[in-house]
Length: 395
Image (cartoon, rainbow, N blue to C red; front, side, top):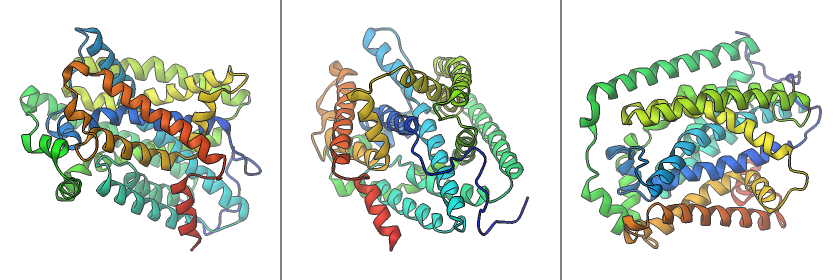
């Protein structure tokens, strides 16, 4: 590996000559934010909520009735896919930051370290006060490592990228084998204490519960660290290759992503999901990232055919431009709607309303984000949390 470069003088291949916003990236970020909510909304509305998905497991797919088929299909299309898409796009953002530093001749990682550390602080507050399955803390730690790596040679970056992929696959294989060996006996009912905590408990009781169980609730970013590194570097590589441009190169790359993602990743998710809960990790952490590549290609193909952007596309663009604020806001709204500290819908609405009320809640929160972000950007350049971050980093 080459030595750490104090100042990246050469613009990385594929980086634009001048700062330019790629419209597709904003749309993809908007899709990723709303798609991530489609995964999280089932956590907010499940018995025991954040703790219940750990102890009670994920419901097995069922197609015995129309409602259960709808729920299973939505879970399948969302589980791990949009989170992986969001992770790839975070890597793209890191590549853009590096390219900006290169154009200015600024030291790297330089000030980006503070940006990552501030993101870690935001994620910590979000984890404690709002949602135990926060992704920002894991992104911040990964960003610090990948930012350092970007100042090394391309050969070194590719080597780390594929080593991270190999280690992740090996870890998932070992964990899946362990789950298969234990079988269905490992699943246990969600404790009554956890159910009551989110249905009737006070807000500060929930905060204390997250703090008391932080080591367990923060396990996912630890187990998926190698995947995060791989997807970050994959995002860097796709950006430098021109995968998000509107030219022939971008269209060609996205067509390949569409074929590989939906042709390989989605069938893998379907098979692993239907095979039983023992293969849950393969669905979320192997099939999910592959399918996310297909979602990039699919979104690019759809938007390329739109001649006049309508309210939906403009709204997705606005959500993408305020992604950090939208991510935190959607979780806050779900807390107020589902938990007992708010309307307590998860407790009040019985099984006869499922899954329709959950889908309605997701659609309502999406509508708030689409409309709210559009109205916000008519008066301000960035989202509220993005503005706070910029203000803090300037000091």
